[in-house]
Image (cartoon, rainbow, N blue to C red):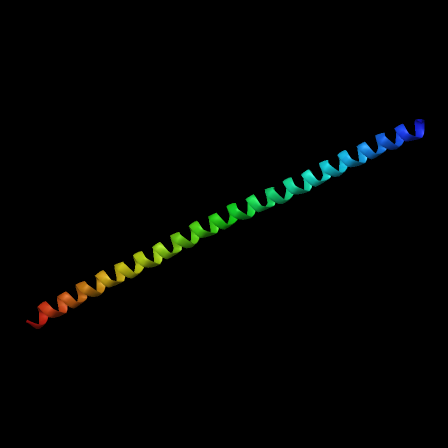
Amino acid sequence: MKSDTIKVIISTITAMSGIGGSYWKMEDRVTKLEQQIAQQEKIKIVQLEISQMRRDDELAELRHIMRIDSLRNSYKK
């Protein structure tokens, strides 16, 4: 009788630790995924800022070219 009780207790403890371990692993994976997603969002924001800066530079260059062309045209007349 005692050995059956001990087996039940040990089985229960083993099952509980298995469930707890699985939960711990799942939480760890979720945390890592959340960190990766946050990192990807930061990368996307930086990439967007870089593309906006490039576009702004291109617009500034086009404005400059337009001014030069305008001055050339007014000089030719």
